[in-house]
Image 1: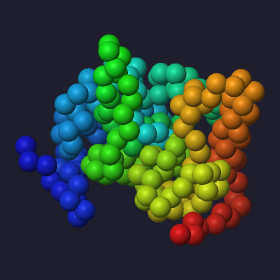
Image 2: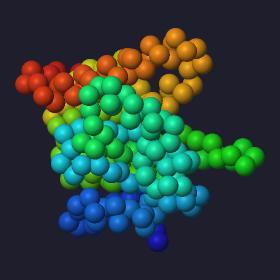
Image 3: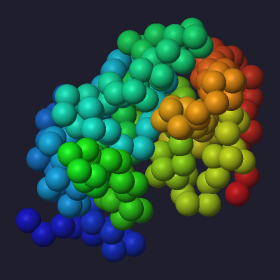
Image 4: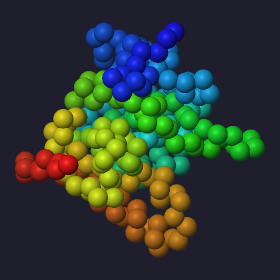
Length: 224
């Protein structure tokens, strides 16, 4: 099937979306997505999951090896860190909707291992209609982006997590928005003290997002 193109000449998954989307038919339709070439090497589509009326929607980069095999987001090592951080921030994962900017695992072979390969901008944009539909359907109070790929999938390539991390912003996607690190970054920290501090900062970001949902305090618009 020929791939439709966006105005930037990227492939797009938009033709695969149902006309009247809800989470159930979006998930089913995503299983046949051929909006870009990533489906060719992936085991399956890994769609988002969680509460249909979640106040918080959390976005990562893409599924990992375990997610690709199991078919659920954030079930591997990074997912376990996310679960622990959410719990320490006083947030139940059952009350959160979790998903990824890209719904297929992109990988390169290293012997018998399948290692994460960063998705290209064209692949991220091809997959964005699914993400847009998830946000539109769930209608969260806050969107939390984990890492640069997730944040830039919505906010554009000029958005820098290093600059905007932990700031509660207003965006077109949801009343509130916050970007922080991806939990996989913690897995790469060798020093135990540094890793403990980084985890505490990650928890603080998530708690700030949760507090923003329950607060009526005004938040600033993002300044480009």
